[in-house]
Image (cartoon, rainbow, N blue to C red):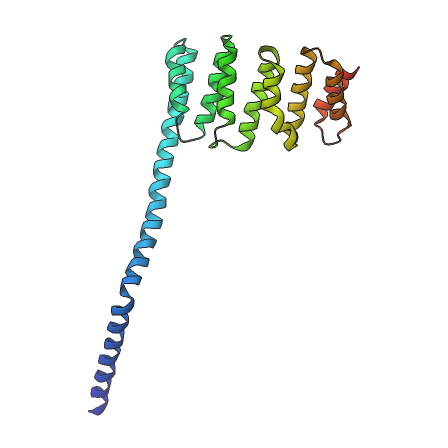
Length: 210
């Protein structure tokens, strides 16, 4: 009979020990469990709303293009403007499309301004921001001045990389338009001499040097 009684005593001791541990650390266990639930659930909720937002802005972008194609430029333009305040990659697409639409209508300053806004939009990737500067620089060659191009593309040129050669070419073209052919030739020669220059740009630079 002693064994059952001993077992009951041991069981009671274990219960007391567990209760003591729970009394001391139970709140932390509960807190950790809640943290895990909220983290996992929070990520799922966030992903859901991100997907919902992306789908909504995708539809809005497509609708804007349809309106423009149908000749309702004003409504399509306004929808694109609304998308520039969005939260997904369609913000960047909206800026670029607004610039293209403005350019097609001869609103050069407006087209440049949209690209400048895209180039400073931190939610866009670095390459997209630099590409926006390159596009703006091209428009500025014919519809701006060299000082504005210099300010816009200086950092792109100094940072190096593939886009720097495009920026150099644009700046050289601006120099030619400004009557500074010798300075432009120096830049074209830099492009030709640089082994990392894209072949297409190197060939174009050689043509300007002839």
